[in-house]
Image 1 (tube, rainbow, N blue to C red):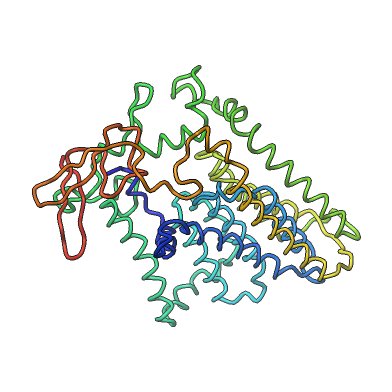
Image 2: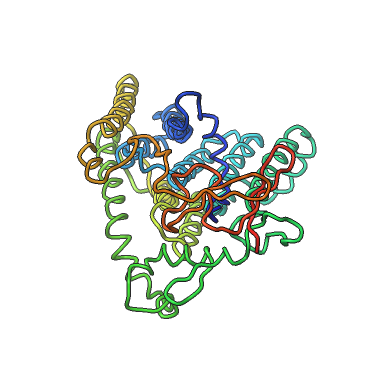
Length: 424
């Protein structure tokens, strides 16, 4: 049993649908791929150069920016796909010109799905205030009260999220130990001792450790944690270790693609203040600030940074678009989608053969479903058995289940399930 098995993202439940006979786990990344391509398809299908000129320009920038900057599908994970969805939500908000309540609920559903993928995506929350005027907030409950089926659907979605957390960890919200039930009530609850991790002579909980890691604390030896976090001393190290390497490349590619598309599309470009979007700047800046002050890791926040840049652009600019051949745009989009797929296929089958020999990958490019190193088979009283890793650093990533890093576990059968818990 590994503490991280309690990780409670909902996306694996979509991935498990692609655990197919014969192919086993080889296609579990298909849902992430489909989400990414669907986002690109939606953005392209909603480009309207005669009506939403500025937003259509930004959609074109986003499409080609995503395809070029994030061309390595192997790096996609729950963090990246969450950031892609956050950008989709930004555009979806401004595509909602009809101001229909059901459209707003669809956006809220996307936002809820975003948070269920990973809880730190709650950073998107300030931007959602754009959806509702003050006088409309009360109408949410009225609309839900009048639509029992919709209310039931929302209740099931949120209940499944908390139930998922509870089944995996014995807590309503994984990582937040205050939401965990007592051991006497829930036998499989994650012990409180597992919420801490020793580092440099200090015991940290996982939230604190995540914040320190994202602020580059582990990559410096000059300051202790108190001095490091005092008076924004961490910004200096974060700038050298994170910003210079990750964000400069991110901003350069974005700027370069923006200029190229602007050159081909714009007939006239002017700076024009649009006060109605100033509120969007404030809200997007709030999201960026929350991210920067808490978990300023690139993959946790590039989407919010992109939204902030876009909010500045729509607030201070206006443009007249040239007449563009729609067939040309469609061909360009299809061409780059093909390049994206071909590039990843070639990388899998050709580019890394030398690296495979050097690093001795097993079963490349598929998941290594064999044991990384031998483990002990431990039998317990009721006839069940599990693998106990000999080396703590091996974890259980490549071992058959059930697997544990700890010897003091118990397995109880209830209904159709085996419940694995740790004896304190």
